[in-house]
Image 1 (tube, one colour):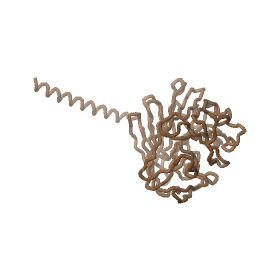
Image 2 (cartoon, helix red, strand yellow):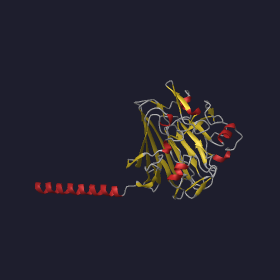
Image 3 (cartoon, one colour):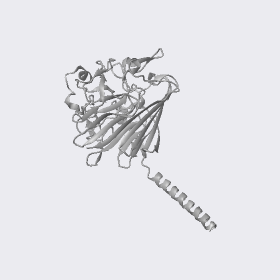
Image 4 (cartoon, one colour):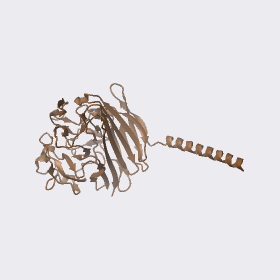
Length: 381
């Protein structure tokens, strides 16, 4: 009897091992992360497209050039998935375009005034690319480089980890910065983005994503009927060159009050100096709950499709931009991208923080780790 049990146990263990190996093989063969070529850089560096798919059929397409989200599908009220981000047709289009479609932005998202800042008594001069200021890291920011990529999975879903090492002096910024961005497509129809960075010298860092959303579909009209809620009681007014003045102004009684869901177009052309400066909305909202935990910052609703996008973040602020500089000269995915044809929800620290001691600091020192998380959650009603 003992011999029978021993051999039965061996047989059972063998069967279980074979089953595990078979299951692992099947999982490997049915991986949701698809990799394909997306062209080459002038120096021959290959650019890859990774497509993540969740259990519900939602997909996110991300290329290694600029860590760029090139496509993102979301369901309407009937369960039909459609792409909801603007993008170009090929690598050449992304390299030529200056609109930052879907790109990972760094070292510093948004604007740094007069293209310079002082850190620990030293002034660092940056390349200017926006009316004498530095916008989104300058003309050769993180969006213009090829990132290394590793596809994988986590308890939340399929993942893509992107890494870029920005050398000391890159675009004028001090310190060698190692930046990592992990995209996760969850079973809850969320695109989760985790940003981390370390440095070997004191520096400043403010990473974000610059996806342009139209919940009706890219190139399907403008976003003026989209309804937006932003959980912020204050915003940072700007000067004529869109650099913050340093004031934190209440939104109450202004066209910037989105504390209740409001159609984008209802006040976008109001007789307001700040609206005039931005040619619409291109401002930083100071989120009510600030940093220190993942909280809901904003919500966007498109009535015809029923699509809803929630923005959750650990960041203290959000730049709401309404595609004011889209003018029909850019096109992709078979569509022309017209004026106010999309909106951006860029989670971030405040613009020009390195020159504003009263703003939350964006300084990163050796031995410390920069880490933020943002989640774009999609549903329909």
